[in-house]
Length: 238
Length: 180
Image (tube, rainbow over all chains, first blue to last red; front, side, top):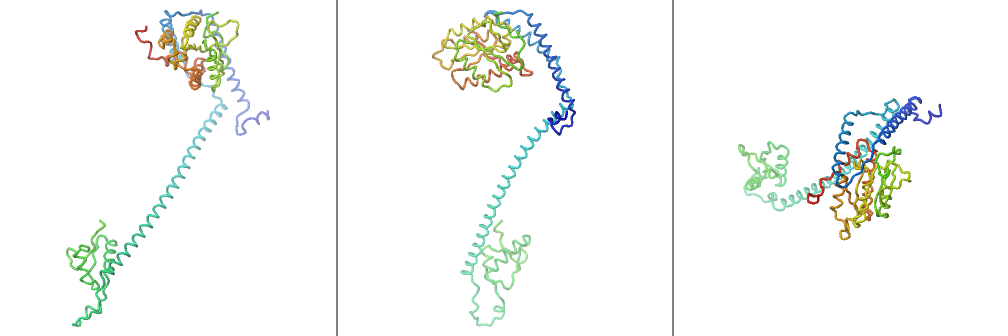
């Protein structure tokens, strides 16, 4: 007995007796069916033969087909579906098979998802790197533009020469530290981006008036509609 | 009994037997070999015969499907088939008989008109298949088809009977009215 049990799946908790019972049951059913067949065969051998000629074949065959199809139809209508006896070990075996199938399907889904994940990670990596290089390029370009602007302004819009002495001693003019046009523009740009809803800057004494006029006249800066002492940068980016 | 009957004996367990009737020995042999190569859950048996009636001395299993192979190049082949048909019981024609016409590819060699075989198949209410058995590829495909049909005729496919299959295979193209 113990030897036979070892052959079975060690996980199975069914009794050895159950397995043989099911087998016997199935064999019994098969034998019954075979007996039925033998009976039918005996009945069939009593039926005579009939051959056909070209002239009567079609009609006879069509009539026969009608009869047989009708008989088959009534058989199907009478028949109820039967299964093999569902004993415990049969159910366990079927259950195991179902679970095996399920596991295989799930493993397939898992591997598909994993490979998809991998691909997404790689794509993400790649796009991230692309964006990084783009960012660097743009930053570089920005620096270049700013330095070019700075040079341009220095060359063409310098601060007034302090060495030119006026005949009249004008204390106010020389006591104030003027800022460069570059610095003025910086103040305006920064204000525009820091406080977009109020981009206005008060015209301070450090602004050299001719340059303020220059900016205003060329549409680079705009006056506050109600306050003439405040200006803002034109929103070229919008 | 010289007349072939479909259910004359009990079937062998898990066995399906096909009978190929035709004058072209080589082609029949090749078709038989192709069929036996097919993957099939049932055990296949192929019998070859030049014509019917079959010699009664031989102990043979129950025949599940008869295929009459007609060579369109040979009038003798058609004649042979027509004579053999007289030795088949009427109940065989309920889905257990098939006609196979070979040689249609070489039109110039055909001495039998296509309509003749179509009419023959229509008279006996059985499906007509076309296949150039000389061509290996076509032969293999046809072998596959015949194995499937044979399994159904032997009752190895639950839920489908030979008669069901016959109804499914019924071609809407019968011989035209002028031929009848």
